[in-house]
Image 1 (cartoon, rainbow over the protein chains, first blue to last red):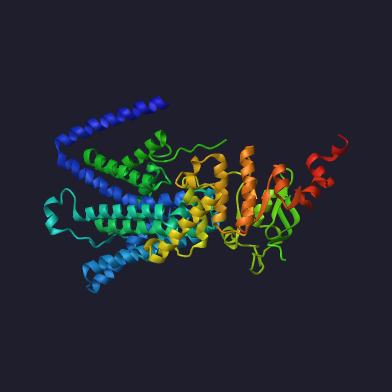
Image 2: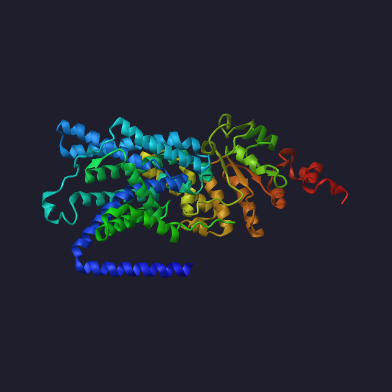
Length: 327
Length: 263
């Protein structure tokens, strides 16, 4: 089985490399466009995927309501931007306040969802918490649908195109660059939070052994809350960026974005933050190249086929730890 | 003088099974006490109740930290119990494997520091000073326990005896007045056990902590303990000095069975 895996893997990699080489020589600019498009997509997925993976790392729960937190972030930004726009505020002020409010609201929702739907089930079987998560997801979707509207709403272009960048805009637009740069900054900050701060240490400790963490004086509930808040904040940033990029939102956007980010987190190895970022980029590129060279209407099919393949050949993901249970 | 730990009538039931049955135990300041008994007697369950991992069915757990008023531990969260000054280790090693030795100890210092998540992000001067002090304190603890050579090693790469000592160092970092050690000598060779013996006495004499240990190594228990508590089937059957316990017929019966005299 192991040899079979290696042979199949090498064969696929070889075909892909040959194909890529051919295309690069044929039309390097088109290839670069697809590459950067995939990078942008992957960056967005990464902002959502880190939330999934952090929560899973600490309480081993797939937080299905995470996509909805992202959706709520973009709705908040839409409302703030529209209201401030009516009063004729400066564009920069609008962007900053939209981000601030989106992050604050998403964090509040993430925090509350954890307290209501997951904390009481902390010691219950994992399936109960999972069902609770699905319930929370459906509840938030329908709540936003009823409170807002089931229709698509236009989302203002918060990050404008730059005139000086115009000649290169067909390769990568200014907003796309901002998405990529923001993702790099956010993930770097996240990495530093985990690696160097006291809360980061407490998170790493709690993800390994909650009872022992409590016994060295760590307030595990506080650590879990912080994890939800941090994950919600990154999801909100992703929500605002992508809504501004796509130009419209509705109550259902959290579902597909959430599922895609979840796929990315599993691809990279769920529980690992570098894994989530890498998985997101791989998924972004896969989708981008597939739609660019094959059929654009099969984009989602491609993403999920990729997930199935990864799960068959590398169940613990690209950077995931091999689960070896002591018997 | 008030005992530093005073457990009254502690009962723990798991469904129909009574793991602990009205146990009374008190520990005096500066004492090394041992809790012994055959396998399955309820020793670890006792530790789990004291440290609030289990919520006891009945009973009172009171502490009187040296120089402070008496408080009840009933119903507190495990991390609060640690903050109150009780630290423990486990039978099996439960270090944070993916972290360095220093980080493992620093984690123990967390509960003695003040600044929260906001401080961690903004890193003001006071927080930096506090963090530096935590590093220094942790390093000092490692020096005392004799682990300073391993500071930046990953915990999982340490030799077995050193991992056991690191667990004690981490517990010590929380500034306890009472250290609960669950089979600290399990799996150690005679040389390591000897070092552990010295370490425990050194801790009591120099660090102002009292110690309650669960241990199966009778030589260690008899040589170390000022006071020994014996439990069997969840009931306390005896208490006394090493000599008293050795000659107690109930204890002999618990360990060897009813037919011991005939054999």
